[in-house]
Amino acid sequence: NAGVMQNPRHLVRRRGQEARLRCSPMKGHSHVYWYRQLPEEGLKFMVYLQKENIIDESGMPKERFSAEFPKEGPSILRIQQVVRGDSAAYFCASSPQRQSYEQYFGPGTRLTVT
Amino acid sequence: TQLLEQSPQFLSIQEGENLTVYCNSSSVFSSLQWYRQEPGEGPVLLVTVVTGGEVKKLKRLTFQFGDARKDSSLHITAAQPGDTGLYLCAGGRRDDKIIFGKGTRLHILP
Image (cartoon, rainbow over all chains, first blue to last red; front, side, top):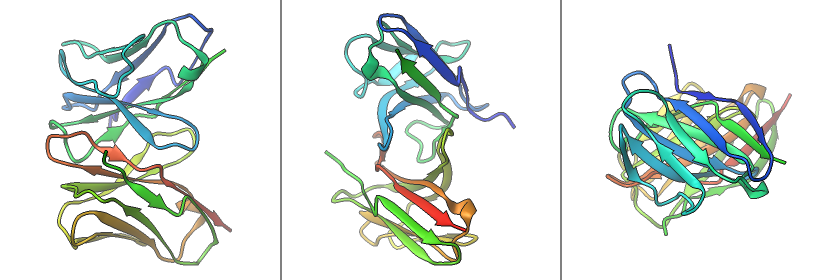
């Protein structure tokens, strides 16, 4: 019963370092979404990927942030030169269909920038 | 900009009471989902509604999609401490991204 897996669960980085967050979708799901959640806030869409393609990155900051979903392996959300404002919970979700009505979420990665 | 407004933001009630939380928008959605999120965890999908006026029940939880598909409600009967959590609604249009509300934080007092 493998759901969406994310690692690490907690990540601490100093300002200026790189943060790399991983997401393995549910078995059979080829669509991955990344969201960011700040305390007392809802989920903010960042990027939607299908295998080897970025479909919608309209929620992604133009600088320092990138995402990929290679043919083999997990999806990666990369944040370069992290700043304190990047501290948040980052969630990955997957679905079996494009822009499916239903997305299944992982447990999240909590990034703390010191 | 599509927005989903959830109300109330916070709700604290005694075990055994009934409650209703709301999700409203000025936009029409093809579908609407409700999720529950517990501290330190990801959101868990509770239900999806797609038809205007649709009502779905999940044990003590009753979900309704408005006739015009712009709003939804979640009613909990005889609330229990295990119902405590952040309830998020999310609306989607065909071939467009899903939008999340900010959630209702529910606390059931034993």
